[in-house]
Length: 257
Image (cartoon, rainbow, N blue to C red; front, side, top):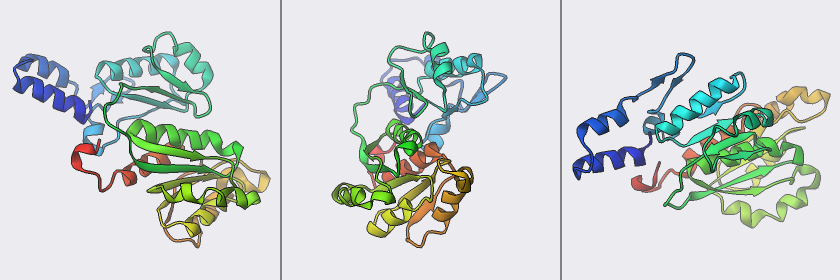
């Protein structure tokens, strides 16, 4: 259930195209639906502007199939993160036609066509090619939520001229997501060049002293560049959500969703 779906139901009731009983049937699972092993929060999009998202790791194929089925039945868009290709292949025949699996991002998206244009501009920047899976998770998340997203990949500080060649593109963004492992220095560089807010995402990419992402995490938290916020290690999803919320600020109420 999202704001568009709710508006449609209320308008249909007002226009006498639906009976109260039909609307009640559509609304009966608000605010959540109990599946015994999961409580699906159908109301989340109306409260926070971000629908419930399925985190796949730790869930069985059967559980994921049931959650996806009930979310689709409720008319919700579906974003499933951290879905392995093996799990997707097992689910492929049971998900609706038009479902999109992104192997790099490990995401599954089931989304109805939209009539409205994407909002604003987010730019997702990765330091290296190895950081792209986390960057792609951020891209998919922000796009599903309704933001316009551009990508600039493999422009880390080891070849800073690659980033400088993209300054005009970077300056168009309302908010930037910078994804980096190793030393995590790219977020500080971007934050020092631009006046837009920067969301830094440390990744677990790096040699031994990177400590699975702890080193870039500490670098980003200790950045001397102003206007940088840092999310958890490999948390492309969290960065995509935050970037979308920043991106839609100042938009007319009817454009927000």
